[in-house]
Length: 119
Image (cartoon, rainbow, N blue to C red; front, side, top):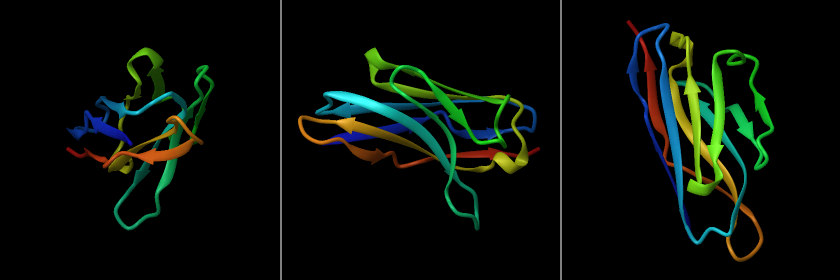
């Protein structure tokens, strides 16, 4: 079994920054791609950013130039640095990871962390 635990959310003023972390633990053989998604009130979940094991990244247009996804493979941890935050970034942010345990890979999700951007 694999657990993903997000941290780093909170309340921040417009223009501020937050750094989210996603720590994976359990029977992990290898973490493949990792990603961050978000769900704003009344909206569907949307992709924010993804990163492959070798560091290739992909971003939603709405966060390009403001958010940076990264990972530390030795620590089984992913990060999302969020700068120049806007009220429309307010959402619950979820970590996703595609993980090989000692069998076929599958996707795992964290419980989510709330990010609120408001003055």
